[in-house]
Image (cartoon, rainbow over all chains, first blue to last red; front, side, top):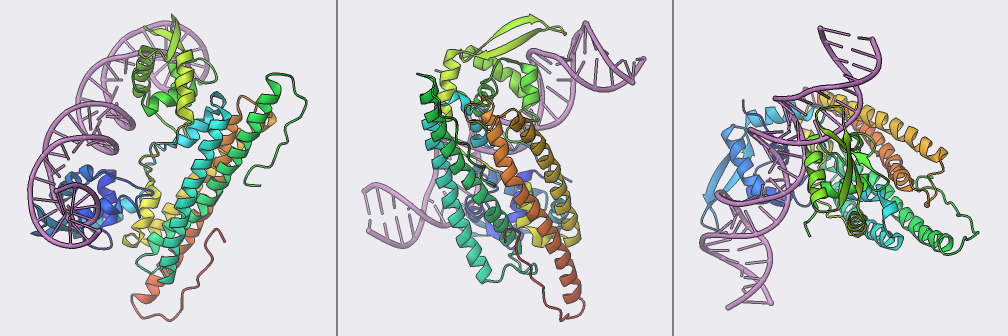
Length: 207
Length: 207
DNA sequence: CGCCACATGTAAGCCGTTACATGATTGT
DNA sequence: ACAATCATGTAACGGCTTACATGTGGCG
């Protein structure tokens, strides 16, 4: 039995609700699933071929718009089994990387005014993402996807997490932007002449 | 001017507060910075050599415990400049991957009882991490690292984010575990005989 | 006519993980 | 004796990103 990569399982996940073409999978790996799992088109097509060779997916082929056939992929019984077995396993949880947190760690080496702009831009990015999440959430709610029996309950649940996790991050970004303003002032006051105004410490974003 | 990889900048970040040996950098890339940026030892040593060749770091060498020299690396002026320039740039924010969310998306294909265990295990993992964060946070607070002028304010700020973001995630995991219990019951009721008890919908974790 | 969406693939090269290799010192 | 910690490196392999390649049909 050939071992399946994380990307392979991601594709099986994407196919769990019904058949899709490679092209549709590429789209899914950008936006809806894309916020928590991404893959390049050049990675997806070879992986589909591998999953097919392992017998976890199969496809119908019709004449496509270009020189090649259009293939609609779906899970086989073996694929559904492999997916079900993988889902309940604890995540391998490898390599989490967040560039913004890394930059925060080395903040002392940066220009406070530049970092203020950085955090404000971050806050805006996450705010736009949150708006997107809220729209999708409202859509699913209107279709009663908050019922665990609903086939889209999984998608609904991922949005619940996003809606719970994004606002604290936005608040933190704005709080950091304020701290950068304060830091710029403190450095101006203390570096040229020893200033006397003490730092007015405010509460962290989570109260 | 040679281009620097994300890992290269991560190492410059880790060195921003003072010189470290390769071995110490390996430790840093596990635990304290490790929760938001990781790197393998086999990746770090060659990258240090590359940064040295680019003139962004330099090192003193003494006799080490093993067959090779022990090298203590520090930023050069050029390194500090390159770091400062990179810090204020908006993150490239590539490939965010979260296996637990991916699995949630395909939840309908899984066994509810298995998934319940999955979410409870996740909640415990994050709870242990949160305890760790809180201990580090208390340590830094007792050293007044909440002052933006404090050299460790950056490290303090990363913990502020972790302390704001982790509890919602834990609540979500526990909420999902409850939904899985409910789902198992609903399926038992509706599959063999058409049950009549309607789903008792509870509020999502963020209220 | 140029651009975009549809649709599928390949190639080059870097990035990351796992495993191998060496060897002194300190603790059980 | 055995294991762990300190300390630095290399090799093999697979994953991922960027870019290239091909061709149709619809829109402005």
